[in-house]
Image 1: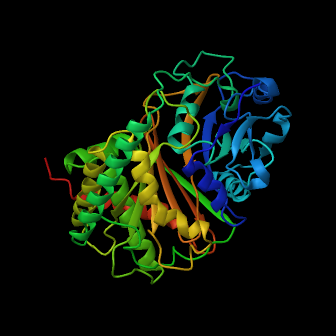
Image 2: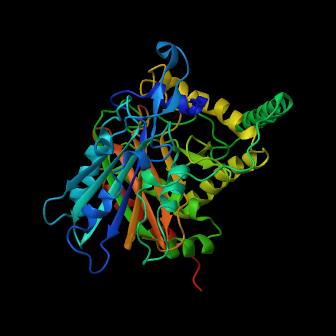
Length: 453
């Protein structure tokens, strides 16, 4: 029998912080076109081939147990009674099956908590999408897998060969083997702790010496309409942008794609808050996860650090806003580059404590926010991909909304497309769909800043 696998500190915190209005799962919506020439039962038959519960792979076949009546730390164990028909569900959109109805359905699905007595995931097959398409929405608890791990798993179940068949669904994808895994000895643990503490001291020193758009620390941010208590109801909106278009702007302005994403987010939030008559004088702060997952790491669990960056929302000029964002992100990245892979998890636990503590104490959304909004960029596959011959047309991420942070913007890339998923509390962020239009307007503004010739 396989031994129990304990959860890490960060993984456990996602379980402890969760409540009915704040489910701690992430998700992904994959949009496909049907392969040419398939019959009407193709999707049902292809998905039925993944019904065998014995074929479900880690971490999808694992459930939680809490030793000592929840006084001990939780562990993962194999679920010997896994029911794939519970976890994999079918839905159909009413005609004409517009994206608006698909996003509305996914909003409702993303609002509900995962059952703690079962493996912490669900998959929903959505038929009837316009333009002869179907979708697959998968949600997994953040204690089970982080965004980069989920992206790596989804990529593994896709192929760049449109003729490949008999491909498994994500939950049946064999897990890659770990290689060169070593357990640090006591001396190594002490060295890593010392390295992390050195990073914390550098972080504190940089924050003390910062100007308005320099190194950002938790709680150095204004209170906005985005930072109160949330309801359990969610609103999901999504959009795709041409990745070559964004890369062209980034290259011309000596920026990265991530810099442009942050600038689009900052410009969009500035417009949105002006429309709501709620733009603060101080700049909004974004919490941006940064992955440090080794190539040979397990897909499950969480392997990321966080940095805090200004969105310069008080700046009207788009180029000045971009430069402020670049400066803030640059200082944070230089700090992390000075640490090794053993230092960063300890550093992250210390720096993230002010973020997690209000949630664990049930104070989030009642006090000054640790940051205003999360903006994540999860790298995706760079080539055109297929699942059993069905072309992947979009991959839209859905992240977490919490008390104190009612809006989350997550971005991924697929081939030549930059896919943006926005998840928000319906009450705290009214008319969230306008953010999509505002992001386009912010990109157009940056394009106008590109030097002629």
